[in-house]
Length: 80
Length: 420
Image (cartoon, rainbow over all chains, first blue to last red; front, side, top):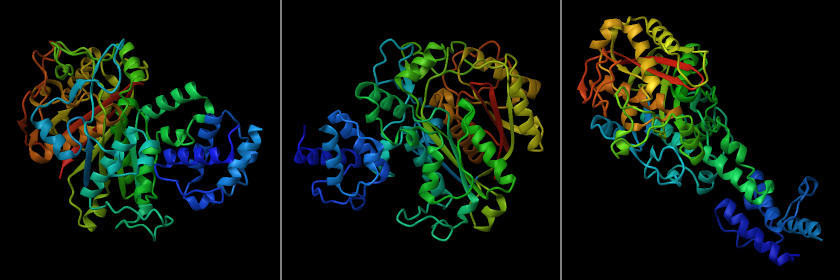
């Protein structure tokens, strides 16, 4: 199971690939809407992370995501 | 018509394309983008040196297929020529007040259509799903492949709020889009329409599909550039091409009121269907003939007024014969007096974009009094006795020209274009 640091790195790498820009400064506290990632791009990032990690994040986990840390926690919980 | 734009295998703008057409150059070469092993044809007319990121971000370029890249570039060129290339501020919500267009945006629409859409994105995402599972499929897959994505993209650039959608009639798509745009303006639904067609479907699976239907030409005498040869005795099929053609159509008084230069007129159009076979044209070209007659009648002229014909002329064995039958039925013996040249002899078949790019070539021929040649005619097929094919660029003083297109599905569309 990937720890939080690994998941954050994976998020940055996938987000950079999806949005064609750097996300090096992202922290778990970064608010997703403030990162300028639109809703479809966010789902693309989630899909790539799911595929990479072999997990399935159900829709209900994606409803109240505010920060990158929220996403990372949801993924961790589903990996457990 | 107040603006023209084109991306073609012979140039990434109208003037470069037109100069190459007049010079009789071919845009056909060997396919290098993918392996052609086991395919029935290994040639195509490809757009060269095109950079989509000149008009969109790298991310947008990835979301949209090549067809959308071409369409946007052609539309921007046409809008610029019409004095209308004023993109909206993407940070500000669209409203009639926030647009930067010098015309009412609620009266400007877009019918720049594609026949097949983003085949490249389809292939890429299906491959991704097969290799990595459905969760890896991009959420942009659907907006990326929807045919109306072309018109949506152009409308979003300018904040166009008039009618916009996509018409698909296979190889008649571009022509139908021009005819329908003219109809919308005539009906009072819009003052300005960005009309035309776009296609970028040269992919392994489409070449396989068309090839297995035995519709594609191969190199002749070892030369890809000799493969597209409408009306020639040794014609064997069409050559897949790609590109886009855009025409800004505008209600005449609207254009005059804002001081726009009028390049020419869509004076008539005719739209019909064979209603007979999914791919084979009617043997006597009946549907096409009706489309031509209706276009001429709607223009309020007679066949005797047509001074140039730019036919569909795909270079297929049966298609060229059916079209000749239609032309002969409409023009009779006088057909021998009207110069004809086939743009596809040089550009290959741009499918959904063909009618748009060919309409541009037709209009430029009228405007400049000089039509481009039809190349690769070593020996005219014996069926085409009355065809006056221009094998070199020809001085022609004509007011009206006929442009016709026919598509798989039996869809026909003809236009009468008039010089300004």
